[in-house]
Image (cartoon, rainbow, N blue to C red; front, side):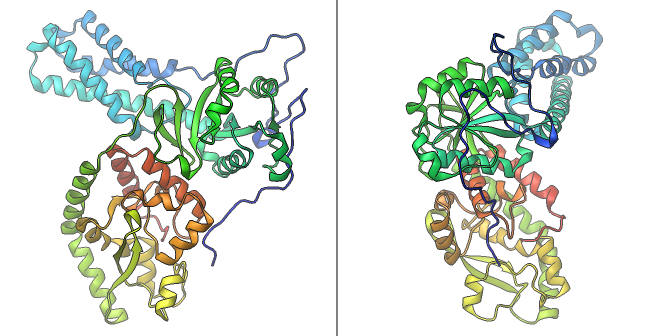
Length: 488
């Protein structure tokens, strides 16, 4: 059984002619019309943030209704709206180059609304209102803003799935080709590469490229691609690209494009740099090029979350654990708990616990067989445990002990760690953080017999952009998927 599914690239790189550019449009849509000679070059049309401004401004109206009529001062609430809009703008909450999820931006939106209310209440007659009224008003304001933003983002996300945003990938040919292939494999990311920009034409003939993606080797060709395809996003890959192609990138930025750096190579993991606004795109760590930035560290908070939740879940799930153990003992005999060596943080081995759903023929099979999810020898109950992931519940004890975390890269056996580390350069970087029961890769469907390259890319993106709130979001999404028959 193969451990990875890949998408092959066609051999032979296509170089774009200097005079014209033709890129196939998705879903049979006609490509954008090329501007006629003599017409002024037009910038790509940006998605307007007007709906987000409207939602954030209108979200205060339900909160006003909570306030007693004598205290509904129009000037006070106008200042509140303007203050919240200013705070949101400063936090890049009106950036339309990304489409965040509701849970992802909930802390930023609610936090700024709370700050706005705190300032207004402190400086206005609203301070005479009861605390309960103010708390309810703030909660209603937050709920309205989040619901409205979720609707706007949902509409944009569906539109991007139907017609992904065109983008150029700038960087070394081999790296740009690999990134473009990953983006094409993930149409749900909302970005469709329409060309590769590389400054080493002598290499292109040897490396090959993605079918239908021309290679642009000059700044004029890249600018023509922007105009003809409506490109508003430029993805920069390769750690040296910002220095070697600074003039080209400055020109693309001046043309109205947003420049994002994707951390496509393991050598760039954890180096930080002058970047800000971290995120992920199809599993690649993504940061807008700009001043400032910095990495956040919160291992203490993560460990506290692990201990509190795993301890609570062990207590709550103890009846389920007992029923599963008794059923396995009756149906399959002794040996209910399965112990297996896995590789955790910093490459240290630990013993992971699971309910035994399969009895390998030998120790060698247990260490080297990739998956047993479809094994016909398993009983129906064992298949049920694997489909519902109930066999993983014992790993809560590993989390409580500190061997694992609730959220993190899935741990693997030493045999496969060595194998995947040789085949995929980014795989060893996954061990910078404690392994987890679930993770960013798992909520994107990368479980069982799926691409190892994609999986380790999502894992590294999670580590690079870690936050405590991201852990909470992943846990909530995992809980929503818990009953789905995905298996592991």
